[in-house]
Image (tube, rainbow, N blue to C red; front, side, top):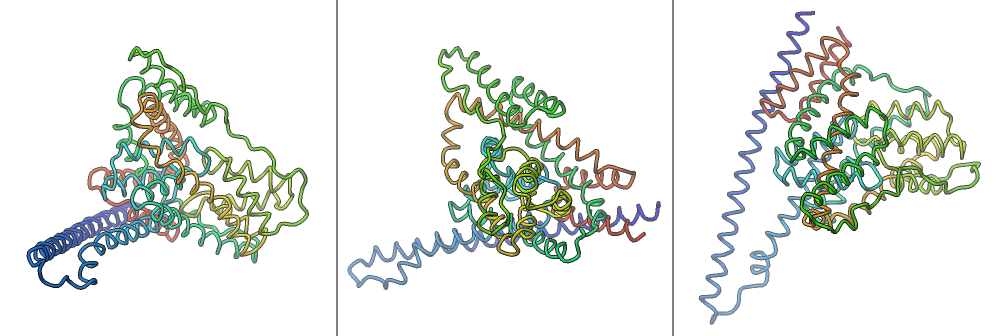
Length: 454
């Protein structure tokens, strides 16, 4: 056992050294690209100055003018889209552990490593995602894409985050329908879950320093943790936390205008039925409508999705058995990316390849539309006094819920001495050496494989 632990420790530090070397090469490459762009801008300016000095001569050809003005902006937009695609494809393939882990990995990649936005901005976007239905981590990815490259970035970031998980689940669904069994991949999660705990703790530490701005936000976060363990509805905790901080700051400022403080308290998470009677067979069109309804009204984590599927697909429409639904849940546990890609698995069982596509589009489409409508208002909401207090309270409550989820994950991940050692080594790697979480996830998977073989 001691020899095995020594091998694992050496494996981690070798991966850490490799990650540091890769990061240095990336920074060197980015510096070279920045120097190249600077030279290109200088050349463009020189061309414009020379053209103004020789205005009496015939004008430059059209293609020269276009090259000096339009190409840089088009190139910049293309580069941003390619960067978004690369980042979220990698996250979609390595983001195990549910929404809390996804958010932690996005914070590390977008804020710490690439500095695309401030941590305060990321917190505001996260707070907004909790107020609208749909998968929170996927909506955060879509927000980041919109902030980075407009509506094209919205489509690229969201699609690339969803696509890897969708394809993996699609293949597993085809295997399941043929063999009627779920692949045994517990060894993979055995090594990955402790790494995810370390990544989430790093995000909690960094996000918490920005979210906890004063005593009311600290108390709101602690109250959200307590409410989580007491089983209080997540949306209710977020709204109460936002309203509490808003009322406190309004009272301290001496303002008499409290109108608009109690907004959005009507929705508490339940969905009304669209179909009054059970349908005999499932077509791809009916599958799309069922999952479109679920994606439009579902609040909370991906696990709340299970209650909707049980009620709609097992009890009302009788399209699935309870055992098939449990197997779909198991598939969602062993695959990276959004838990909502369980819809891909269910859609394939109901209507084949067309059903897999229809279910995935139906459940994620509302998220793209809602983010596109709401994102332009985020900055204005932050600038307004009463909505700023509301956002601060929601952000603090969100971190409290994230802390509560992390404790539950830790109880299932840290099951013996080896998993505790992996978690500690991972925490040192991310907190002390700023190692990229994707590499650590792969290392955790290698640890799980070695533990299975030995």
